[in-house]
Amino acid sequence: MTRTPGNWRRVHIIQGEAKVDTDPDVVMTTLLGSCVAACIRDPGAGVGGMNHFLLPGDMNAGAQTQSESYGLYLMELLVNGLLKKGARRHALEAKLFGGARTVDGLSDIGAKNGAFAKRFLEMEGIAYVGGDLGGDQGRRIEYWPHSGRARQILMEKTVAAPRRPVAPAPAFRPAPMPAGGDLELF
Image (cartoon, rainbow, N blue to C red; front, side, top):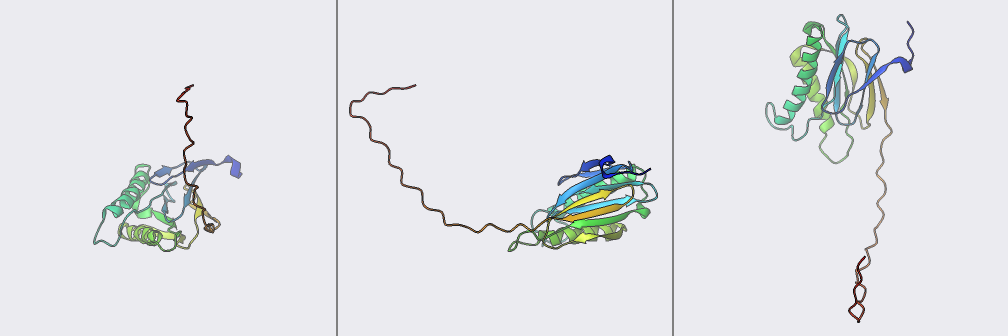
C-alpha cells in the first residue's frame, strides 16, 4: 500500500511528554531547542515512541540531581511504555535529537541534556543508532515509530533584534482642576 504524507496520523509531543504507538500510520513530531527527544523502538515488535525533556537547573552536582530525575522519569516512562506494548528490552534501539545551544552566554543546558540521554542509553544497554545532538539551531523532528524512520528539519537561527534607544516617557503632569468645584460622573 502506498502512503502519502497526507495519510499519516500526526501525534505531537510537547515538553514533559512521552508517547508510544504501534500504528504503522503514525508519525510523531516535536520541536526542539536545547531539549532532547529520545526516539526508541523495538523493530521486531513494531512498537516505538518518543519523549521530549529538558533538564532544568544545575547539572554540576554529584551523582543524580533533581534535574536528572526529571529526564530519568521521562526516559523510564518511554521505555516502560514500550515494554507494556510488547517491546523486548534487549531489542530496543534509539535515536536522539536536540540539545542545541540556543542562547550564547548562558550555561549549555543542551549539551547536558544530550550527555544525560547518551549516558542513560549506555546504562540501560539500549543501542544508539543515530540522530543529531548539539549545534546552535532548533529543529523539528518527525519520527515514524513503527519503521524507525526519522526526519530532522533545522530551523533558521533567530537573530536578536538590534536594541534601539528608548526615549524617556514625558513627565506626568495632571490637568489643572476647574476652580468652580463642580464634578460630573458618568
